[in-house]
Image 1 (cartoon, one colour):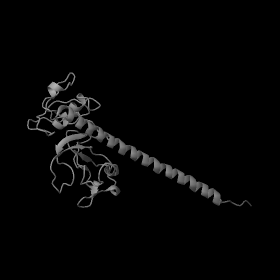
Image 2: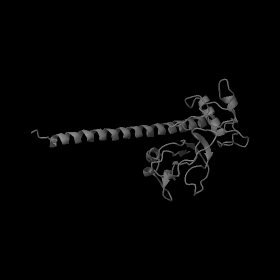
Image 3: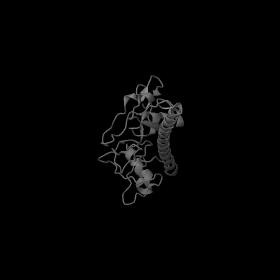
Image 4: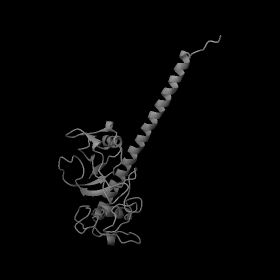
Length: 236
């Protein structure tokens, strides 16, 4: 009569070690992916801020708002539309020019930003792949003077800011905030924004998830909520 044999303690230990190694590798891989996405977004934000200040230093004006762009910037075959020169990147300004979209044309044509972005003073569609850059999640960025950031219950003065675009996981934004600012979504130079151009219909806007932040006052990034539709703004 044959007797069935079970696993020995050594065999079970080997299996457990293998499982542990596989889980450890999986978690480490996820950590590396998250870190890469964080670095990518930080690099994109830093590159655009550098371009913004470089443009301002050279022309003594702001991209999109520059009133002499048509004579001082070579846009190739296209004429560079002018802003109104009032010191604010508006969308639209008093004349109806979308300076927040025009900013990308001025920056790229002047050589401060990689890529080629072209638009007219009053585009029929605000955001397109030929007029505006996108974040790693395919959503349009925006460079604008407004107060669409921070805690909506606490009025804030308008400032120039660079919006990351939405559709970004909350844990990514929380890590960026910890690395570049104070780690809180309603304070500092990197804050929550609930506004962003619609991903699949760029003429519209789309709110981010209400669960991106939790708590009153300074609030905290709601990492445990797991939202994948959040956005932030870097204030200048």
